[in-house]
Structures are given as structure tokens and as C-alpha cells.
Length: 104
View: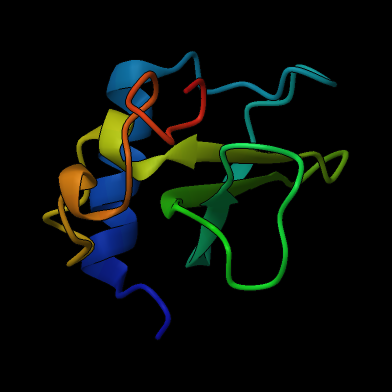
């Protein structure tokens, strides 16, 4: 389901607090928040098959209106999971460094 206007506003507020707000490729300050969330599947090794992921990282997507560069921001790090109705990080799979985790 697409993000609501309120959710997009919450994401923009978080990005404004935590980033410089410019495209790293062209320096433009015209960035748009996409209306959907990207879920990055996390695997503990390169020997994976369909459905073998250990969790996801919900990510906010921004696009530069000038050059089209796309950036992904971890919704947990931005602190917007509650506003976006996303599950807490500990329900998304093993943490880095735990047995079977991204570095384990």
C-alpha cells in the first residue's frame, strides 16, 4: 500500500533531521520520497535460494528530480517505523553478528 501524505511528511522530517538533503551524485536539493517502501532481503551467506532469507530491512526510497539517482534509507535508522506501521527491527530476523546473522 502506498504511503499516505502524512507518512511521506514524517519521512521528509526524518530525512531533514538526519541528512544533508542533497543528491550525492549531482548536488541537487530536489529529492522526492517515493510512495512505497523497499524491503531488502538479508542473507547470511552467498549459498542462498528462493525463500532462504533471514529477514528484511525496510527502506525508504528517494529519487533525485535532476539526475534520477535513487537512494535507500533504512527506516529503522531514520526512526520512522512506527509512523510507517512497520514491525520492530527485532522481528525481522537475526541481527548482524548473531549466529546465522549477516556476519555470523
